[in-house]
Image (cartoon, rainbow, N blue to C red; front, top):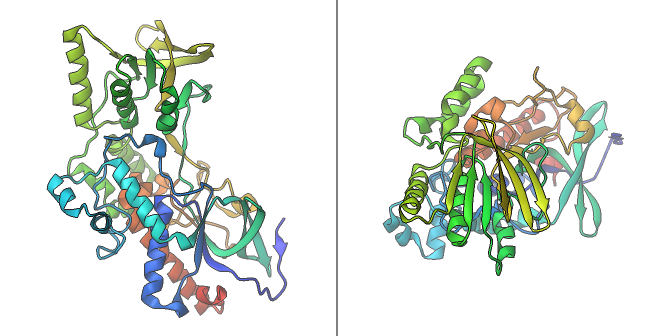
Length: 448
């Protein structure tokens, strides 16, 4: 139930609470810090972030040693918003003594493990704004005079529950591993997000076969990695396509990731939105870098020549069933052409089957009832990434993720992170001024 406030409540209320502290909310914290340094204490925006992990981590299970980013290093946490920021990837390189070496490398695409280190470096510089090991478990509305005055955020810590208050929320809880229907994770059935954490447990054993399911970049990277790491094992790649499809990263197609593309997509009618997704899905979904495709084909052809085939591709096929056995796992693969079943006894099945965004309303409790949905049941989101709510909710709830249906492919990707957090910050400031002009206390005044 909502807690009805007395006429005067002296409890401190932050301007913003962030749920999750992945790259998007790290970028948000940086933008807030830079704004506060520029305007001074009197106009500073007060904010704090809560992250359930014990420290910063971003897809750690996928940090394969030779995997590279698929976006330019210039699309870091800050550069497109503030090219002079001290939080840029170039400043990170300078601090590590690798700036000249990186320039000589002549690449726009750093190693993924290096970009993760950059994220950790940036997160550490704003660690005063985050509490790790703190899980947000609920949000409740606080009502005054019939309207929601602020939100009460319940956080689970190692010592119990705490309640924090804020005028606005920014939700950046990331993605959740997506499993095929009817398949659950187990000791021998992994989602690729946990690959590196799990694969170390196989040290000292002699795996004979892995099955990797999926047709995207992660699946192909997993196939290449397992093939390299376990030279005595057969690697079976299962996907419904005839072969891996190359990602379209040509210059014109990449305009779908431009900041202006978000404006176009948001304003477009629904039928145009669907067309844009159909036209440009091959820039991001179930596609593989052409260099990796070529490397895998080169490897499989070489093995055929030498008679040492360890790479096996079961194309135009699907995974029908997975059962763990006393000594491994049995995968049933069905041909989509003939219907013929192939039984594969393996040590491990790796499911590189993608991710789905976390339910943005899942933590909001009865506040979710005040969030509006479209005719397809999807949450309605304004251009500034703020959930559309009923008029009695005087708080902003902003999304960093789960906005693809309203803002397009690029809206939740790293490509647009720096711009997105700047737009959210601008919205917070604009709404603060608007509230003040209608006789409400300014955002910055409530937090002191």
